[in-house]
Length: 238
Length: 388
Image (cartoon, rainbow over all chains, first blue to last red; front, side):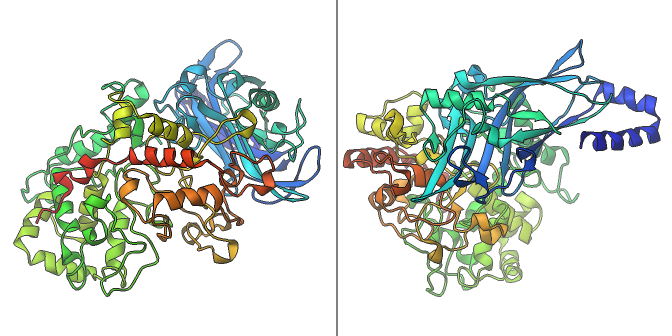
């Protein structure tokens, strides 16, 4: 995907005169981050009982998966660009399994690394002032005394005795996880695609038995185990 | 999001703090300034309408958007108010908007389902009006109106509501010197668009922000013990594992605005009223998406104590009946919110949860908190009253 998009840009660049085009990009140019909901190597399917409990094996479905991606920093190896007020809610559901974030200005010519947090810094998490996609009157708000959900997954599991609702709301300051990803992009690339492996939430360092732990909300140990699982949620798109 | 504005008054501070906020204010201001800069509507020397600036809205309500082509002006508001209360808006001149939206009832009518011009009962409960700048920006129970301007004309056009052909309405309005003058001052013309824009402006400015809860949020008063208990329950999703008891209200009703969430379709939910066989289409009639079947707009709870009966079809007479539903009456269906299905204060067996299982004391506390959302100043504000 990255290669295709980059190739398209280069063709456009050639048409305009490559030198001029590059200069423009370096001066002021948007950067698009594109996120794809995945189950392993396959696109994630919502609203259908097509996923398997990592331990019990029962089928489950999700209606939503959302997470905050914040404090984005690009690096070209020597210089860094921290995107101001970068608080994005990445959202997937049955309507859309891809989500795009456009950063209006990204001055680096070449990006070799991106870093960001999954979740919110304590200052933002403790504030009721709207900031980026952080909104105290939104579905990601728990309440103003606790802060926000960092990662939300909701759905249902078809168990032997009936439907079990699945509710995973992971928050708390201590569960913000920082990620740095090395990127192998061509010079001037203005779109970066990422895979979001939703199953990583349930099947990572800790492997969950969803029928035994169908909800995680306020229990700090459970929340921290899921946070360790989502620490590597986002990867450069294969 | 980028076009959004923040309210300029604030509970906590009276100044906007972040650069984001500075940018956000622009939309509202630009809209107002545009009408000033570009002068008269048609070059024929009409006076400019007066922008409404700096109206008071709590910053905790968050961002809002006013359409660039319908800036808030005093003239539009007054015209909208006149139209809202004038039976000239119905085909047989017997009904006005206020027939089903009475101010003292939080702009509802006290009926389970509203009654149209010929006495026929409609399918739906009259929605309360208030704070519509915030919360879902899709209007009506099934979200079929993408703006207040669009919504404003729907009851007129419905043959069993007001049954008012628009061309006939424009003729009636044009024959009135009173309306000629008001339309001229607000929009420079009498037109379908001007009617819808004026009504939208009036409704947009029905802002309720002086309830006991608001005064509590401003730090002016304390809630009493029962109300505070209810507030905590309102704001909590129950978690048996950590012994957190909750009424689960906040999973659908945002903590400050108390309406459904503004983003996309987040403000619509299936709250377990009916089985699959009886589910009405709801939002899916608008979106044509199966996952939306049986979802209805989550209304604001502002002034909820005076806006009964409750639910989209007015099936519950009292707040106690509403709480009983959430406590023990949840009906399973395919699109039922997992948050409602899962929310239980007692049982650990997740397949058996059909209600919150709150105690009577807790139910009374939540109802006491809901009464703190009543805003007497709003319900009797002369600016929102019948001008005739």
